[in-house]
Amino acid sequence: MEDLKISETIQKGGEKYRSFLHEEAKNTHWRHGAPPTYDAVNQLFEEGRTKVWEKGSLEEIVQNAIKSWEMELSHKIRIKDFKTINPDKFKLIVNGREGLSAEETLKVGSYNALLKSTLPEEYKYYKAEEETFESSHDVFRSAFPRGFAWEVISVHSGPPVISYKFRHWGYFEGPFKGHKPTGEMVDFYGMGILKVDESLRAEDVEIYYDPADLISKLLKGELISQEESAAADAPPANTGNCPFEKQV
Image 1: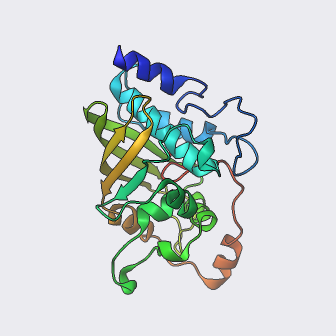
Image 2 (image 1 turned 135 degrees about the vertical axis):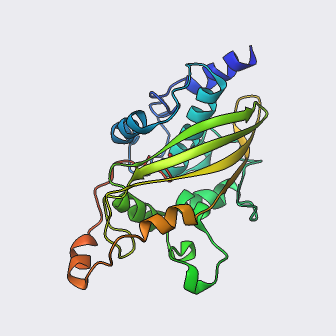
């Protein structure tokens, strides 16, 4: 009965994988003026996923819940419009660093929150502290024009404390920080711990992964010449990216 309740809560008002996307709330403030579309990354997800979870299973519910949270974080601009988190208790903790509140996470954006590093400056190939929410999304939207898909690989415990393994993947088909694309698939794995309330709203999100698994693959391309860089600097059209999934 608990799984049924959670399933009904998370699927209400959503598209195929993300609840609350096509909600009717007239006062929701969207970052680009309207809900994003996820057609391209949904296709990437369906063609490249390694698991197809049974509808209503715990794995599918967790996968869609996190996709919905990522959607809100990337595309809503007011915490009070979020339906996937408990704003008074929410913390995002990445690789054991100090947790970020809901407002702090929304301000910096998911890419910067996930890629902040304590490495010495000479080893920082992505400097989160120098990027804004918008610039970070432009960087990864450019590198992954088809999106950066996300899937649950396994779930090891159910609510209220959910532990899971995940995979991210996409095709490196656009420039990244002065490097040419290789066209290769880029993927990495990680673990997450998600503490939720009775409505499956996130209170604590802990993510553990090695950022080098991502960044090292984006540095494999040749360096872009000055002439090529000028042509590549024009920002791509917005297609509704979200961190770690061009659409998460």
